[in-house]
Length: 388
Image (cartoon, rainbow, N blue to C red; front, side, top):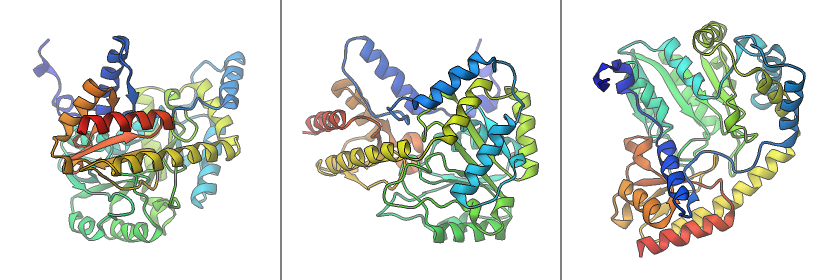
């Protein structure tokens, strides 16, 4: 079959480079190479035992059939309570839709809101799926640099200049992948004013909301009037180390929540029943395991950022959240994608080129610090040797 037979929406759609790098790294390992994995957005700790135990119980109790399309009622109630506790916003469980990971929330938001020719403002550099769906749906992309943490804050005047009568959707991601920026309450208040003024819906990706270092997480959902024009995206993958469980959720205004339920029914029927029972156990856990994980990430961040910043020609801002360091390598004189390839092929260090996150990421490399400190030091030593 010729690839030209594929629908244009699929041919226009992009992908996620981290998975490409991961596959190549695994192939090198299969050939006997030692690879330091700094490419994937995945905690390196196992899913906490109480969550795994709850899944085993759910299987033993026979929770292996369909679940309601919008999610188990008990889990929707638990997510609503979690949202009220963490965002300070009372949420009716009918606004909650349980999804098979966080990515479906992005798909559903775009499918429910965006027509060809509508404008979507999204972070660049940012999670690549945001821009991929703009192209797939023949929308008009308005990329906007989200800032990079302590040295570069988001330019809200530039954001205001992008908004117009065709702006349909604004995508936020705080804490940000890949830059690690966390928006302040004042910044979100200004963004909320812009959304109201231009009648724009906001998709707020807050999947890293619990992984914070030098900042406090604030949600645009809590800004006055924004509950009626915000889709909150969150999930279990990062906070509870459940990437392979494929469980996320949306909190959305009632018309959008009903639309999402319809889209779930049309696509995959429901999220996995027994996994949702395990998710209930995750939400019931105390905060201490999460705090320990974040403390470990903080130490790793400091080691990696200090090591990168000490390399000739490399600059790296301190991420305020997430577990990514976004290093500016333009001072080395090297082409960033070529350098990423050489790092993997010659030095056995897997990372992702900044261009994979949009044109705004040119000249950068993204390193995940979801790896033990000794492996981070080994990666730095290999990078130092490659640049020598």
